[in-house]
Image (cartoon, rainbow, N blue to C red; front, top):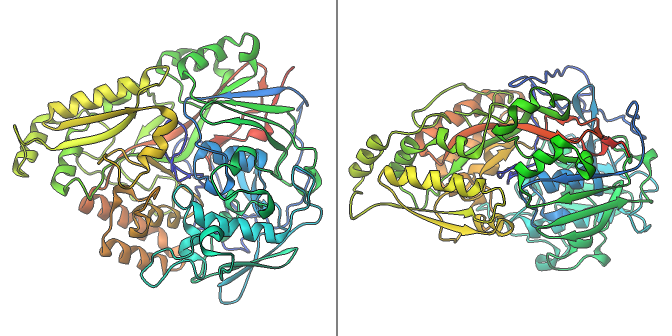
Length: 593
């Protein structure tokens, strides 16, 4: 997510999966996993390597019409290699881009199935080689054929986008990093195409070569980083995503960064090869940077185009009576895969000061200013959510996601650390200053006022919403807290997709996903120890790691477990919460015309 790095529903995180059991191996089949959809329930993502297209029809679905999706934030681009955010990721993986594997919804469960590949990959006896064979007849949205070489090229190209995209490929693929753990392969533009980690020996075969076993690779294969990209049509810059060719049921008609994305049908998409997607709508219009409260009010009234509009922003507190009462049929909520946290730069803020921030932080007043409700979030005291195997239930003072802080105690802690009147410690952060609903500005004012009352000096830097994601990801920026990521949405059914991406020292870089910009050999060593265990034994160890990390380093303050909120017009049907991603199954939606 992502990784969040999010992630999109108002905060930062990644495309995510959460599961009830240890990550299944490639031969796990479809049995032995259970799911409940209630808050805090168990969620599974089993595998079905035998699934074939076309996807089963949605009962009662009608074809035609346009769905408008309006929400407050905005993707930076639509390049498949660069995505690790919830919103852009789900748009691509459900609508415009197909990958080696994908997900299908079955009775409320998300099941991993083959997509462009004929199965979920075949692993060698030593676990260091994975082979995928492509289906016949796959074409791009311009009618040209897809080859295995295009997928191998896309995977190599993703190494040029590790500032915004995932970095699992750096950690696992052969030849990606040196003995010190630094990334040495930087993608085909800088390092050339001679890369040992992936190759295409023929037009139908993609082979991954690993430095160490990667049992959860089939889940990574569902990322847009394995979506094919024809080398001849891409550009060696960040503009390719504006008009990227795709393989999904829809293609880009127009994209205006920060404003709008318009999709239309891809006539070269073959449903017979796709076991997970549909093409009910004529197209989609995504409107970015919207006033979420105004959008939600319009949807509830459902006049004109609002009747065919969906929003995935958290429902404002002022509308709760409607969405739980007379308008309940227009609202879906459920578990999400994301934990939101208050990020602090451990390089710039001393440990004693980070602990003082924890004691002072006004969670309740910020939630009130944001219009947060129990329908959109529940307090978090851990970084591993309850749905993940090995979750350890614990609470540390100042890190429970609740309360308004203790400014008197925080001042005393700052004084003990050598800070006080005339020598205040300065907290610096970016905030969105052009939110049309004014929510971001209100939240910022509450946060600033409360932390100043606790003895901190505050420098808040207002920036446009379309620029904030880029700025908070800069490793050398002036800010020392609220940097990226502001949350994390888990990428597959194992905690090995939680901590290595968020606290590994290798992730301290431009656009990196390291919570707290934390570099400590003890942290890296402990993660390596846990990852070396059999996957079924890792869960409890990650739970212990969670508690140790927060007690010892305080890189972030757990804030809340995110919940999905989908509000939609009266002509919008079959809105399903995908609890593994915290997003709606976009291609399953149909509308009345």
